[in-house]
Amino acid sequence: MTTDTAPAPLAEPVLEASGVVMRFGGLTAVNQVDLTVRQGEIVGLIGPNGAGKTTFFNCLTGLYVPTEGTVTYKGRVLPPKPHLVTEAGIARTFQNIRLFSNMTVLENVLVGRHTRTKEGLFSAILRGPGYRRAEQESRERAMELLEFCGLAAKSEHLARNLPYGEQRKLEIARALASEPGLLLLDEPTAGMNPQETRAAEELVFAIRDLGIAVLVIEHDMKFIFNLCDRTAVLVQGQKIVEGDRETVQNDERVVAAYLGEPLEGTTTATEADQ
Ligand SMILES: Nc1ncnc2c1ncn2[C@@H]1O[C@H](COP(=O)(O)OP(=O)(O)O)[C@@H](O)[C@H]1O
Ligand SMILES: [Mg+2]
Image (cartoon, rainbow, N blue to C red; front, side, top):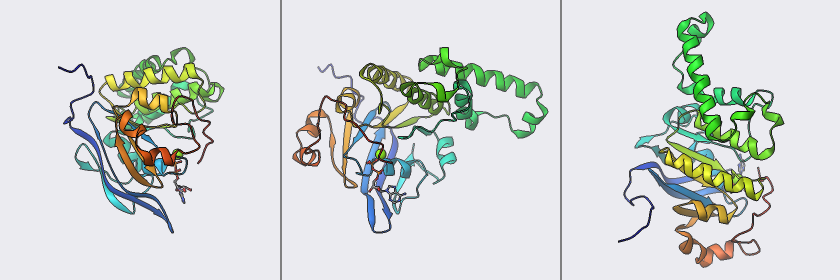
């Protein structure tokens, strides 16, 4: 008997990326990458700066149309348009925080909900009972999400006045507002102190417990290996290895790729590389 709590290896795939290539002129930023994320999984994506991690996310979310390859979400090929990808069920956060800085915390989450609200423009103009009910429900749901992310007390603050770590949490709350089945996090702990990073870890576990699969890019190896069921390593656009902590840490290609960078423990200073 094993006490391993990792999900069964044959859980349904949520995301399947197959042979994804992204070229910019002569530069191949992502080169033949296959990656599967299954129901209930937290999967890590690591690699040195410039390895192609963010570009790969952009290929998954319709910001870029991959030069080659396919991406499916729950068995359906994704249309290469960000709003359609969000509608299909994939939400993301950005390496460089993208909030509406002059809107309140609550308003930022409400914006994230718009793909899921049925009330159209017409009823918004009329502001009839249907619209008011929908708006009320949206606010309640948004407040629940802020509660979940530990930001309820700040709901009326302007996003730009939040400390950095809380802005990152707000990005997660806004992403969750679109009711995703898969959440992509691009360096969610960049700029966080160790305490905030631990809280972020708990938050990601809680998100998984809601039934949302997670794919996370991070430089902080301690965070990645605490959290992830499986980690893939990108180096110069190629996935060189994928597996559990031991597999990744003992792979000599990984060690070589990280030569000169700490592989474990410390939060590496990640200059915003895009
Ligand atoms: N829109 C773009 N046009 C041209 N080159 C790009 C573009 N986006 C990313 N790149 C290049 O692709 C490579 C991978 O970048 P990126 O995906 O940001 O790496 P990572 O997130 O792993 O640090 C880098 O060499 C970067 O300069
Ligand atoms: Mg990046």
